Amino acid sequence: MKTALKLELEEAHLMIAAAIRKAGEIGVLETICIVDDGGYPIAMDRMDGARITGPQIAWNKAFTAAGHKRSTHLFNTAPNGPALPGNEAFGIQWSFEGRFAVFVGGFPIVVDGNVIGGVGLSGGNGEQDTQCGVAALQALHEFLEASGHAVLVAADIKK
Image 1: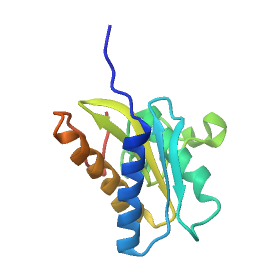
Image 2: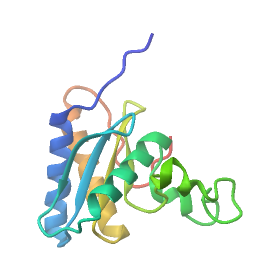
Image 3: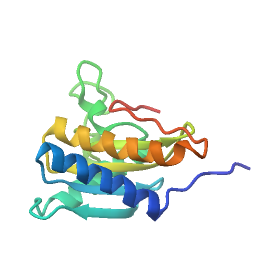
Image 4: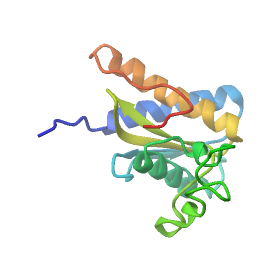
């Protein structure tokens, strides 16, 4: 039997707070969603003035990152992105009633080598969403570092 870490509300809130701080620094209005390892939301915040479509998009990105254990933009990164035309997963974005996101802004949350959730962001361009997502991962890293847990902090994650 395996003992598994579970992401909780406290960690989700500190990740969202870090992403919002970064969004404020770079001048973008974001929606941030943190999901558990099954892709279900633990917490979500939409900054004042952010797009009304942001919550669904952020959730889709977090769902995809957690469920498929990779950063969402890696699906369509040339030349071997599996969702690119002609590649093995072309069309995967229509899976799960269209909830499967294959563009930038979703990152798996990897602690001690295991995917325990995902973070999804919507509101900025790809670079801005990535900066805010990495800030969220960095905040979790700093929070868990003292307890001896290792958090993968990177834009390109593939487990």
